[in-house]
Amino acid sequence: MLKVKFELWNQSPEQLREDSLKAEHPRTRERLMALYEISRGQSATQVAKQTKRNPQTVMEWVHKYNQDGPFALNYQHSGGHPPLCLNP
Image (tube, rainbow, N blue to C red; front, side, top):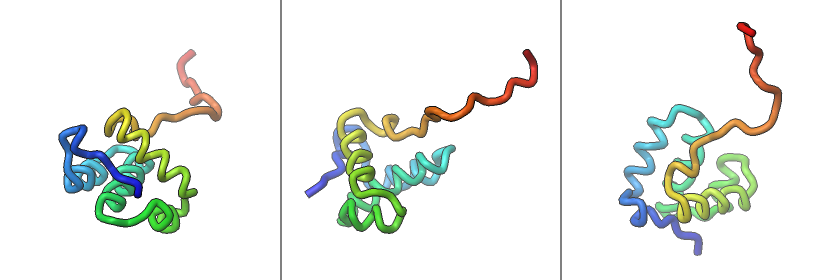
C-alpha cells in the first residue's frame, strides 16, 4: 500500500491540508491535497479519478514527497514559450 511519510518532514495530514489551501499555484495545491487524501486512506487510483490524473502521476507525487519533502511538489514551469519581454 502507498504511504505518505509525512512524519519524515515533521508534518501531519492536517498540515498537508493546510499547506494545500495556502499554496500559491493551483498545481501545488492539487498535489498536496492528493497526498492528504491518500494519507486519509484513499488509493492513488481513487485520487487520480477525482483529479483526472493518471494513477502513476499521483504515485510519483507521493514518491517525490517521501524522498525530497513538501517542496518537491511545488509547481515549476517547464517547457513552453518563454514569457514576452516588454523591456529589452
